[in-house]
Amino acid sequence: MTPRRIAACVCGFVILPLVLAQSPAPTDVLVFEQASNRWFEGPSTYVAISPDANWAVFISGLGNTQLYSLATGRPDPEKLRGGLDRVEAAGFCGPGGFLRLGARGSESGIFFPGRVAPALSSLPPDAVPTCSADGAEIAYYRASAPDKVLYAGPRGDYRDYGIDGTVTAMTFSPDGEQLYYLLFHSDGHSSFGRITLRTGSSRTLATGLDASPVAGHIALAPDGRRAFVALASAGLPNNEARHKPDADRWLKIYELNFAKGARRVVVESPGQDSSDPAIIGGNLYWVRTVVHDSIALVPTGGGEAKEIVAGGEVPMWAPDGKRIGYTFGGWRLADWALNLDDAVVTVDADGNRTSQPTIIVSGYHEDFPPAWSPDGKWIAFHSHRSAKPVPEYSSLGSSDDIYLRLADDVHAPEIRLTDFGWETGPAYWSPDGKKLLFNSWDRAGQRGIDKLWVLALDTESGRPLHVERLPLPEEIRSAQWGAWSPDGKEIAIEDNRGGQQRFLWVASADGAHAEKLLEYEGTSYGGLDWLADGKTIVYSALAGDRMQLFAAPRSGGAPRQLTHDAGNLMHPRVSPDGRWIACTRIVQSKQIWRRSLP
Image (tube, rainbow, N blue to C red; front, side, top):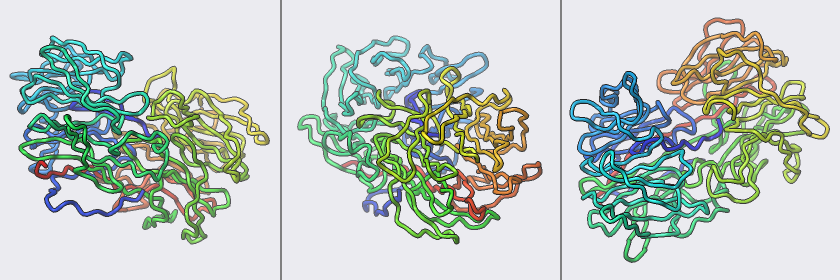
């Protein structure tokens, strides 16, 4: 639910506000566009283009991998599988070949291209590999290993090279004799280096680069004297600016001259990220991330979604029904989630915005939206608060917990309520104002599996009294969203079953007597809430190729689709007067562009 920095798994396949209108250069060609019906997974989707520019792989998380023909625009799931039973991620390797992370029968791991069928490699499953042009040489690093080592050599015979940083991109020279790499360093800057594989010698070609910590691509010019990299600026990175929602730090494609050290912008798109350069057949390709996110209102009986503020996500109503808080900042890949803060706008009874946005929560690192206590005294919010401006999402010194603050005093101290969070979600107050409900991964459990937690607190001082995991039955796999019923006696739960399968459950407030109401499909953390009468649950689910809002009777029965919007609607919250549903509206895509090589 919080924006997860999707970790690298296999290279060639890595997991990992208002968009300003702009006109592309006359020579730019839009090759392909993939619309996304997901949430934060859309901007963080990894894209790789085949060496012949005929195919592209899109990865928005393990198990969410698609292969598209750039000629027809159609997906080819059978070609992606290549005879495997399951493919978690994939990339390109040599002429027409694929790297695949997946399983076939009892075999599982990373598969190399084979003469007849994919061949299981000896690479560790957390390896992030890339191939030389002929597919004979492999380079890789381990995404989850604490040691900073890069491995390269012929298949099965790898030499290790010590590096001083985290690898974010690699590419071989056309003859396979040299390996170029981009490193992200703990202080926030990146460096560009080269290893001569025959001798093992290494050389740093550029330092002080303002690159993203998120894994991507670099491209080597045919003359071997230049490279193309995605940078937020031509200078040193400013870690303070990384945390500012309005900083102009969108990625641009730069030409990096090895001899002169010069950095020249060749592609930029204001308000959007341009990343992942590739050079194929005398052309420069790159990926543009397009996102338009907003807070919208929908009548509780269904109907058209009315946008009230651009650049916002995950709305929360104040108890007076006259204010909506939300998260804003944009999904800049160079500063992933560091720049998210919270704002608030006022609305009238007819759902019209009556004020400009004002900041309600701000600080270093990610902030998720303010949840007002029923009496309006407090706001609770999730934050990765850090004491100083850290350079990236997982930097030491960052938290991942639930915080409390007096609602109407932006300078009031932030009270940290928890100290165990791991990808924590938003917090929601019980109707009596004495407890908070939130989701978090369990550090003693499985990564990627959400549990619900209930925290009791002293409402006078804001002091936490105790917190415990809600003892839900094992049938509930991953409780990634929860909402109290209006009387506080029940909790509605969005259960992620894996893939796109979702279950809607209702359990008593103590976690007992769980009842499955229905099954549906979703693509992300869709969210849910109750209507004011406690007889209906509103949730987000997949309808065709878009996420829409639905209403399901608490007593059981067929759900009703409330919206038929051209965008994706998620994270519904019902207004205190029961008239409106505030939600996140997102229209986003990944675009592949091309121009003649400069």
